[in-house]
Image 1: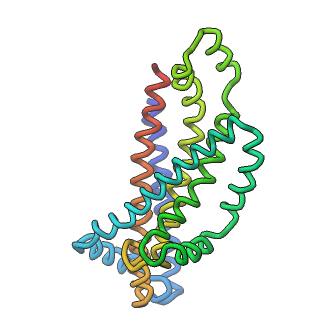
Image 2: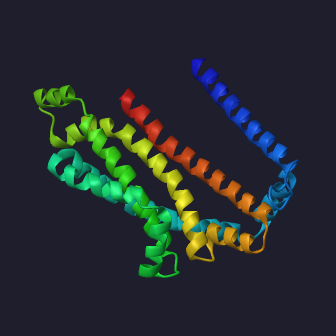
Image 3: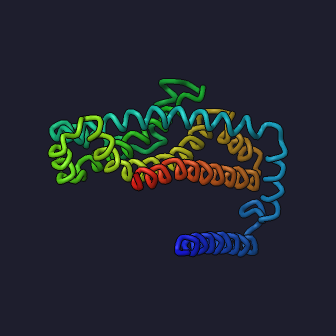
Length: 254
């Protein structure tokens, strides 16, 4: 009963948020021309055209492949760096400032450098997703390791847990919440950065479509593609939540 009530409340909150956004949008259209703030109807019609076009899946697929490759590399390196920092404090003192530098440098600077290094071929998009993911994952994994309950580790020693059993029942469950949160942040950041990189470096993918709409002065098309990005983010976030959080709950019951 409580779970159903909580889900209904969350759904209500989301519907209210959507209503407020649409209301604010409608209000802005009363004060600005369609070239500045397109109407909801024009964006909706543009969305229908995008979905009806035969190139939608190919366009989304190009961006998604770049995002997945970038996240796979960035998350893997971030986890490795996070584990090293978590278990070796001296190494952490060296790597933390370096991760801070990665976080501080604006993504557009990385894009320009990546253009020099890789050219106009989509590789800069992968590169900046990697660069943006490493600090988020690395710092979170390090914090997760540092927050492991020492009493649990001592209990594992008392009950003669093997290293694999200790990893499965103590270390991974302790780190999982930190990783899940960091991965969701990296995913949201990755979508934004990947599309931005495509706008600046390529003529294909979702970013390429947005750049074409900008050149043709089609703000309704830009917003329509932005809506597609938002939908893709929430869909991917939902799938990841189902994968990680439900598995965590099953492990907790076991």
